[in-house]
Length: 92
Image (cartoon, rainbow, N blue to C red; front, side, top):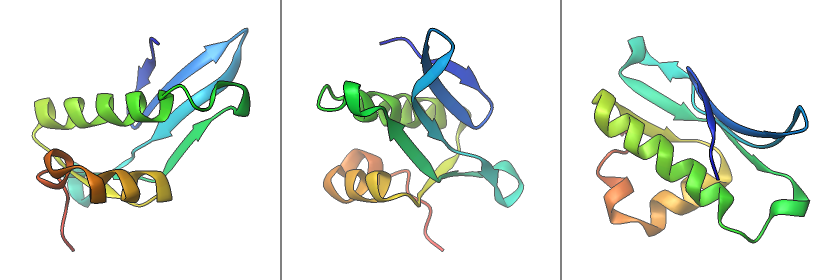
């Protein structure tokens, strides 16, 4: 699935309606992105779309040399299970 990027947001639209998105505003002077919200429309769940969104945020964070703070439940669980993601995790 292809996502549209805006600073602090990746999303997918179908017919002008957002059906998948992840929000990651910059905090701490832009050195950290806070993953605050992940959403996938019920009709699209079970296809790994949330994982695709998060993986793209992780890749963008690596390129931007920033850390990630997993705040939403989905991101926290994914970071707990993935050692590669943990390497980018911001520690308060």
